[in-house]
Length: 460
Image (cartoon, rainbow, N blue to C red; front, side, top):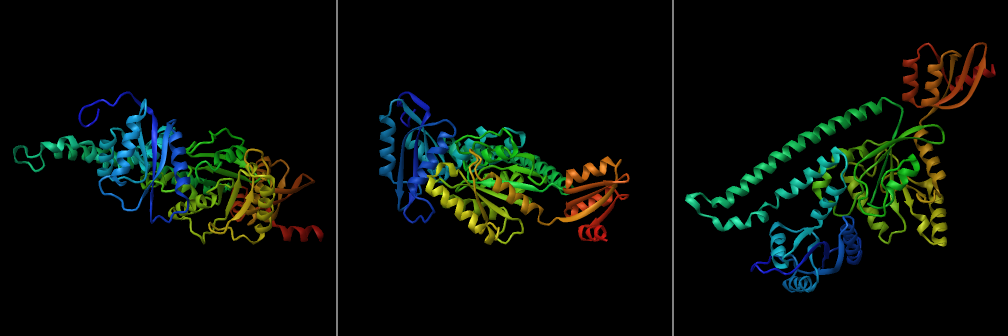
């Protein structure tokens, strides 16, 4: 129904218009057309059929509607001329509550801005209890700022019995208090999640298994890469935000080093602040990782802009440019490049690896295809080298019957050689400072000597 109570015909709420608002003084990293294409992809991620899309250039943002009245009227005419009439218009920009309300009135359709659209996607995709808590908190935080839109029909009732604002204002305040109570409860639950994750990280610190975190722009191929590395079956689709819930798997590198691989939610430009705050407990895994794999879609036209957006979020999370955690940029999807570009990228990344600072801004780069497996041997070898570079060689002398100590060394170290004689076994093994300390504590009866000392004894 429109403002006059007239019906505009059958509505199709599975169909949508997408309008990307491009500001004249915008110095963003990608073109308005590319951003429109991304907005269309976001709409399609929740199975909406985009029947019309355009870029609206705005030189002077209007406080009432953001875009000019002529553009508003033209879109209203297109909506009315469509059969069936789309029931949804997506405005790829941040709308104020007043702009939101006025556009819905002018178009007689449901309006979603960029934040609301991403929240809708997250609401559909979240599967775990933790994911749903995070999405619910983001939804309520966003909804709280939109209450004026929900209760505008009561604003006309002001002045009742001397109370300022009348019944309409009282209803808004009542709803605001109800939402605040729900927000407080969700924050308490998420604080418990954060404490639980902190305890889990503390437990992992007591084990020798380093953590490798996968980050990247949404649809860069993180889940496909995760599946190939972990031989897992995480949902992986050519779709924005195909995976939201964090997943962790233990994998073994070529040296035998076991690592914990962590898949995270994809980043996106203008990621709503509500989502960054809500998902902070999950994204803290990135800040605690021993190695960060920044997965990039090297075949994407806006690959460089996507990289900068990811780096912005990482720095917001506390991953500094001078951080002590090495960063590998995984140049994924090389199978989509033509032969000449693919070979050039592979050669360039290999040539530059020795000089890489391995920071967020100057990472070590590896070219791979998560689909075909090309480049995976190089990636695993580099991960292995970076995660075991602090290891030293030791020689452990054990009783041959001490199966527990022998198994521990095979499980937690890189065994280089074994020699058995007269009921004893000597094992040359590479261990980190932490793991050799753990071994001495768990098996104080076993002799453990530094590699150089052991070699000298054997020569003598």
